[in-house]
Image 1 (cartoon, rainbow, N blue to C red):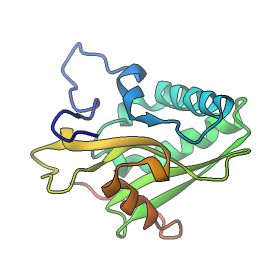
Image 2: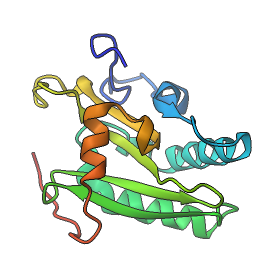
Image 3: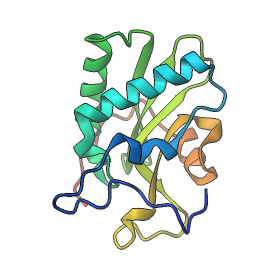
Image 4: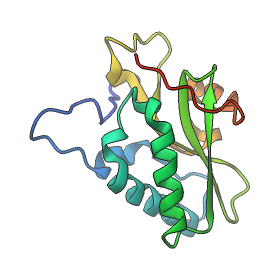
Length: 162
């Protein structure tokens, strides 16, 4: 992914501007999935976006507990019972995301609308360079993949405010 031209779609919250699921599609990588798995994953993300779109922005990972709760409710109350999710965090809670397990797919799926910054990014002055990712961990950008691989599932939530 070209770091100069990529921007997190959730950054611009200008009044009257609508952020849609379509804005996030370029961050979904279905490489390594069958057509059916790919469609299930995208359908789930679309539904999750419709219920949590206000959280799909850089820095909103502090709301991961709410995000996880809504994702689990969506799975429980809909036809997505072939998907399981669990939270992950990095570096004692500096970043949160969800990991999904889809029936028939051996690799874990990353569900990270909050994003990981490109190396060297000042997250306070360049939040648009904190890039979301959705897909199999092996296909995430290298810096994000390294963070996802170090994820801890047992540390719980540490709510912080920037």
